[in-house]
Length: 473
Image 1 (cartoon, rainbow, N blue to C red):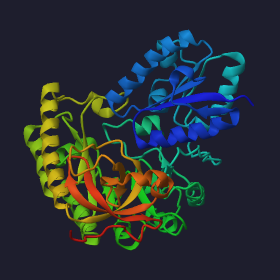
Image 2: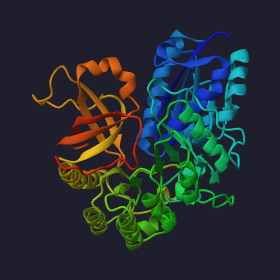
Image 3: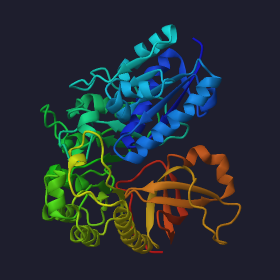
């Protein structure tokens, strides 16, 4: 079979990264192999996200550039997948005549037949049909990148929460959980391929299995924890209303579960939370935070916030800032509210002016940056166990103490902190020994988004429990 080149441009969330891997897997039997070069590809798939307006704009901008590439290469197949494809459907074909295929969030496993039809007849196809359950034959795992040490594994699809600002139930369908045996099979496959860490994905992992009568999410984590060769488990995203006491206790009893949770709150004001249809109060959320810290006092907690939600007053925004001060997150993602198609809040009154939203966003980010810097500075002198991911592409500190002959590497701690460190040049010959290994790093520098440290022990082939220590310098 003649090899054909496939380029997948992934825009948006972690779920889209996982979907891109599935796409690569289902198209591999047709002879498609991955390439980073759009200009030489036989097929380009734009895997889109519609959660934020900026991501949608980025997708259409890329599609516009592809029109020129297709003029130079008329045989190029241009496809659009993901949430924007699900939302817009045939409108994309009408808007962009150079697009050959539009496939929705539930159509990944129907891709091979669609691609065969396009290759043979050069027809144009739109498939945005939603199914009620996850396909029984999934997953088809795509290839790992060279040196990849962590992987995503989806455990459920869709959402039943219907937050008023969110389009996920409309573009990804209702909540549906995979059978635990299929999840465990995929994790074992990834471990056999060399993965040391998995992140379990879902729009709301905390409600895993509820509708189908499967095991609880805490029970699923317990089963994943027994898989030999797997050293770390992460998960995202958690809805606060479904964070059970049993799930919180897993942070104290499962040695492979990383000491970090992403727990989106969106707002610190009860009135805004009610208007968002979040189904919890500020006090209930704070009780969850206290429960997590009672089980694991040094657990890293991150969150999501939306500023400028329709009707948000200065007092309500201040309540959000007060919540951040109270919780003292390790990090957060914050966004200005924007109307999304099909989301009820698009029809809400009390829209906030753009300059006000920008001002509030900056105030929130400035507050969190100060907290993050303080927390990072407090970690100087500690030794953290890091899962080494590879040569560093980020921090290049201007520090004369870092010799030119040293090579910068990076990895993550159990608490999800990015840690850069230097190793002697002779480690270049041992690259395969360091990538995917665990190393003890003495933290010597604190930055806004990462830490810098010195290798004091490693590489090791075991995580040895949670992988965090507090050895003084």
